[in-house]
Amino acid sequence: MQRSECPQLFGREFGADPYPAYAWLRENAPVYKAELPSGVAAWLVTRYADARAALADPRLSKNPDRHSAAAHHSGRVGIPGERGANVMTHLLNIDPPDHTRLRRLVAKAFTPRRVAAFEPRVRELTAGLIASFAGRGEADLIHDFAFPLPIYAICDMLGVPREDQDDFRDWAGMMLHPSGKRGGVGRSVKRMRAYLGDLIHRKRADLGDDLISELIRASDDGEHLSEDEAAAMSFILLFAGFETTVNLIGNGLYTLLRHPAELADLRRSLAAGEEELLASAVEELLRFDGPVELATWRFAREPLELGGQRVAAGDPVLVVLAGADRDPRRFARPDVLDLRRRDNQHLGYGHGIHYCLGAPLARLEGRAAIGMLLSALPDLRPAVDPDELRWRGGLIMRGLRSLPVQFTPSH
Ligand code: HEM
Image 1 (tube, rainbow, N blue to C red):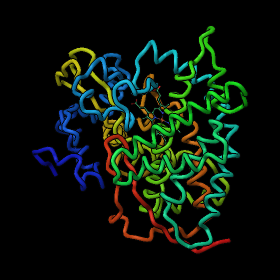
Image 2: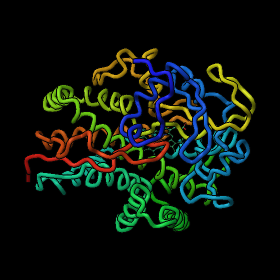
Image 3: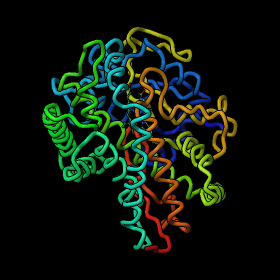
Image 4: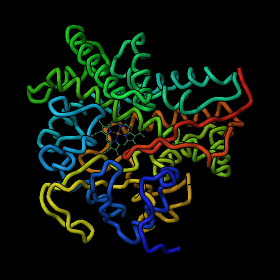
């Protein structure tokens, strides 16, 4: 089936299933200038090899202020509610050498060892959430499960006291489901930032063994994170690690429920106490329908050629991870869900210097959530026709608004 024109991008049908449009782009216009819903034009890169090269290309900057008037004026490049002097400097909007320094400092605090030690707490949180709805026989897996787990997990890790964590749940909920009120998301961001700034100030006087204390301690040849930098860093850990992980769990469970044979295979292996299939399944779910559809913004520092197209200085470039990860040039049978896929070097966590810092935590949460839920509820099934489910709008992320399910109640 060859269409001669680019299928409609960013409409409702596209939101439910963007993959046919990305396949068309990959074959016919692998670097394509599209008009985004905000009115800004940006280059979409959809082939795996081009995408991987673009993610590692130093000629593409993350800093919109210096490189793109279009992006600056669009007001759509950063965290909601951020404008002008209010914009935070964080890992996803800076380039080396500032990025190198900040990333080195945070990597000292956010270590794989710290994440591994956090596993029992993630499992405890997951078990608590499952217990909260297991007796009901029905649940919305986004609202009741995928949404609260990452927010409680990262709050715990950062050292936000338990009694304040429900405030974060409310603020984060506002970001996922903005109530039509103008400025609601911006206000939630502001409250979170103010809270974190205050918490850091208090912790400086009384350091503990949480991640914020570790960020404050982190030093590099005598250089310390300033209080503002530590606040921006805590915020970006929350912001980058929240909706992404909600969608890993949500999209992952949705995909499994739509693939009964693969789901049955995974259940059998979980029942046999094997963990290997769960690990490769979570990677494949990320490749197949990952949370980050488009990597965050990049801007050409200078005129350059990408996939045969001339990109002007300042032009925004969006790397389509969801398109690259279905590229038949890189993956055999890319539209087939293969939980045992080998050599699965997907781009779901990005690539290059901005490669996801939180990948070990995301993997831990994804495995705990999917593995424990399937083990606890053996007859989990969708409560509505999956084709009727609605996807959240938004450019960068891909995720469901709700995922209603039914199962035999257990106590
Ligand atoms: C960066 C994906 C979870 C923290 C990224 C990038 C991707 C990504 C694609 C690169 C963006 C770019 O190059 O434009 C994901 C996915 C997740 C996830 C799919 C869940 C399944 C997390 C978690 C955290 C986190 C749990 C932290 C708690 C970060 C940070 C960056 C980042 C700080 C910026 C790194 C840098 O610029 O150096 N993530 N992420 N992410 N992620 Fe994640």
